[in-house]
Length: 275
Image (cartoon, rainbow, N blue to C red; front, side):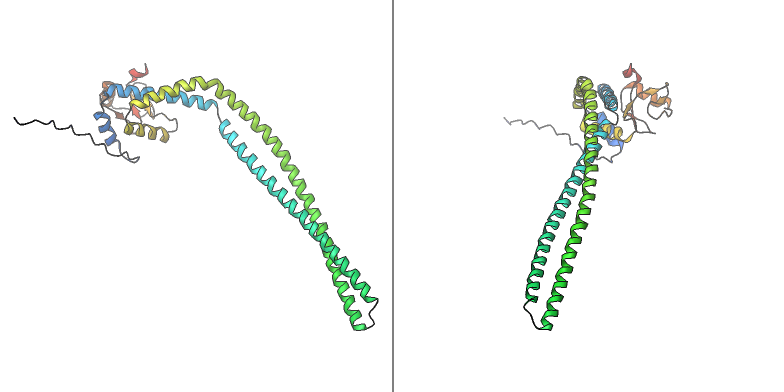
């Protein structure tokens, strides 16, 4: 008796998701899904509803997150400038110390040459030593000028450093106030946001990767982040408000296929879901 072997079922091969793909492949993928089309449409609507509520919570925070980030960047920059100026001041002080040592060397050399003058009878050597003394005196004066100029620069840098420190104190206080304000808003909405994000994850887990990719792409491309909309005023797209043909309205009401607005690219769902 010949043995019978079961032929393994062929696995469905899915094309890779391309962010530039047209909605043709999305429509086919949507129709071929294991989940009933009507349930998938309802899940998309629920996903959009959760995302819209999350968007509202984020809007409550307003510009605070951006302001906090900007203040943190400014404070970091002020600290870097403060450290750089302090390093310059330290170098100036080292330059002054070096100039003082140089002055001491010049004075010591001048004293040595002056003692030698007392024992020299040759006029040529006498003139040569006087020339060296003049040169050493000139170098000493240059070092003294360097010290005075450097002290002036140190004064300017210290004044600049004080301004930065004052601004740093002000901006640090501003940052603390902004952070406290933001934390209060986050704390007030944390539970609600957690529930919404859990609901969002639950919906997203039911939707195939291709449809989720298209959904996210539409959300990012429209100003109000509405990828899924109903029918406005009975005959128009709830996203762009362009008129929908009667045939398309019938298709939307049937819940049998994914309908994409030909004007704005949003997904249009049965108004009954909204009710």
